[in-house]
Each structure stands twice: as structure tokens, then as C-alpha cells.
Amino acid sequence: MRALFLIMVLLGTLWSAERHFGFYELKGKEAGSLLFIIGGVHGDEPGGYFAPALITQHYRLQKGSLWVVPNLNFDSIVENRRGIYGDMNRKFASIKRDDKDYEIVKDIKKLILDSKVDFVINLHDGHGFYRSSWENSIFNPKAWGQAYIIDQKNISDVKFGNLDEIASKISRNLNQNLSKDHHSFNIKNTNTQFKDEEMQTSLTYFAITNLKPALAIETSKNISELDQKVFYQLQSIEELMKIMGIEYERDFELTLQEIDRLLEEHGEMSLNGHITLPLEGIRSTLRFVPMLPKGNSFSFSHPLGAIKERADHYEVMIGNRSIAKLYPQRFSGSCAAKGAEVIVDGVSQRVAWGERLLVKERFLVKEQAGVRVNVIGLVTSGRDSQDEVEVKKGMIASRFSLDEKERRYRVEFYSEEGFCGMITAWFEP
Image (cartoon, rainbow, N blue to C red; front, side):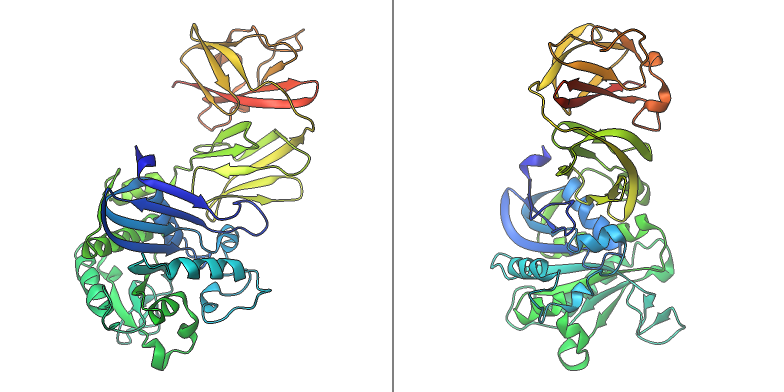
């Protein structure tokens, strides 16, 4: 059902040495205001990119629209660094063409300036807890965390231009539902035009100088729990959507427990269109993963999924989190077969490469001319191929499972030309 409300466009690849950002549109059945949510301009601020990632996966709209970029500075996110090519949020006044961030900054500017955009928010984690007066080294006017950052109070004659009033309303509502009293949010007005030359190069200042209302949401880096920061980010975004008249639903209850659960849902990764790996609960190391000698293609269902290529393996990332290491076994050539016939619990079905088998008790792969079957972890003496063998879970060595719960197993197919594809046998608990 969510596919009716979500359009995803990936601008560039998600796994190359220089990753571009993902762009998502959530559109309600009824027209209304458009809020543009941008996360991940700083790669070491996970509250600022896991929150919008959850929005793309679990929200749908009845009225109005959201544009969401959860991973603006994707290269820096997977390295968990502020900006591996310098601070991207200081490149919106000017940027050189040979800067590695040039195309990203150019493309996000174009989206911000689109006539349909009514409001822009930039999501961050900031140091300390902002307070208007000095309390100590953590709670003070120089801190950025737990604050709504505005560049000025108002933009005259612009819809939603009353930035101070909007930020104050969000703050008042949010501060009624804090996990701890010292987590309270305040308004930090940088008076950018007159007092902060550095902020004049930022994303939000670029927006407001082009008559696009904008603010930054900063949760505190001094809050160590990711679910807590994401909780506050989502609460803040929902308050702003209400102000803008954007009506929405989500498929979960907004609690810390539910957010913690959702943060562990990593989705799936597709490899070369022939292998699908479920990433939730995946073992930390998988060996002999069939891959091409070069030019492998990875895609993810999770908006923060990416690959880091190492000397002898590939590291699967969800945002700044390392999920698994894949050690390849290289195969060249191609295979004409597109799938296999499998008898699952007595019922015949045709399964394409990358698909899963839901198995209660047993399965059997039917013989296919020129194709060899290998159930990884199954020992059958005297056979080159494991087709026409009735396989039960207890027959497969559990250490070869894809997941820590020992329920998912690889069924791989080969021909004389090389690797054909893989299906996954999912045994019910």
C-alpha cells in the first residue's frame, strides 16, 4: 500500500566511491503545502539522517507533500565523519567546480528553489544543550544541541515566513513531552545577516535569501541514545507538519521502544540482480559470496544502505552502522537459467533468482538441464548437484545460515559458464 504514496528517485548510485543522495516524494491524495526535509549534511550526526530515513519508510500522507533527502552527504555518513571533503554546510554561498561536493550542492540547491517548496528543514545533531544564558560548559549560548536554529525572525510577505513564531510553537509543544527535563528545546536565532558570517554560507541561509522559509533542528550529541534523538526529530517534524496543514499517518506508535525496533530493521540488499540478502539479523561475516570479477551492482531497500569496498571484502553499511562483511568468490560468465522449480512442503512453485522460499518443513529443487544446485551447508556424498534431494532444516549445518537465528539458508545455482543465481530458504521458527 505504501508504494501508492511513495516515489523514490536515486540520483546516482548508492555504492560508488562518490555517492549521491536519495530523493523521496511522499504525496497525499489531497493537495496542500510541501515540506522539504533534508538530513545528513553532516555525516557524524545520525539523529539527523535516521529520522528522515524512517519517514520515507513508515509515513504516508493524506494531505500535502513531503520531499525527503535523508542522506545528503552520503560519503561522509558511511565514514561517520562530519565532512570528508570539508564542511558541506559551508558551501552554499559558493563552491568550486572541482570540489567533490559540487554536484550534490548544485542539485540540492535546485530542489530547494523549486516553486513547489513551501518550507525547508535541515536536520542535525549539535554539541551541548542550547541555553540563552550561561549555566556551564554544556548548557550555554554557544551550544547547538536541543535547539531550533533560525537565521532571522521573519521573512516578510512569504507564506510560513514567521520563523520565530513557528519555532516557538514547535518548542512549546515538544517540551511538554520530554524524556528528561534537561532535554528541553529552545530557539537559537543566529541573526545570520548581521552577526554570523560563517552561517551565511549555510543551507538554511541560502534558502531564506531565496525567500524559502527554513530552520534547522538540532538534537544534542550529548544524548547518546540514537532512538532518543530520532524520537525528538520525528516529534519536531510532526509538529511542523501540523502547523503547515500536512496530514499524515505512520504505521508505528511514536515511542522510544518502537523507534529502537525500527532502527534495527535493515531491509534487504540485492547483488547483481541475482542475489537478495536479508539484512535483519544477518551474520557479521559471510564468506564465498558469488560476485563478478568487477563491476558488481548493489542496491538496498533501506534509504541509508551502502557498500564500502575494502581490499579483500565488502562492508555493508546502514548509515554509519557496519552490518556485515561479505568476502567474495569471483565468477565470470553468465547463465541462461532465470530461476528454478522447487517443491516446497509438497507444493510446486517457480522461483526467480533473488526470491525467497518460505518453508515449514522441507523443500526439493527439481533437476534443470545444465544447472548444478548447491545448498550451502548441506552434505550429500557422491553427488555433484543437490537437486532432487528433499532438504529439511536439520540436515543443513546451522553455522552456514545467513542469519544469527539460523533460519535462512543459501541455495545457489551454477552452470559451466559460471554462477547463475541464488534463492533463500526461510524456515519457519
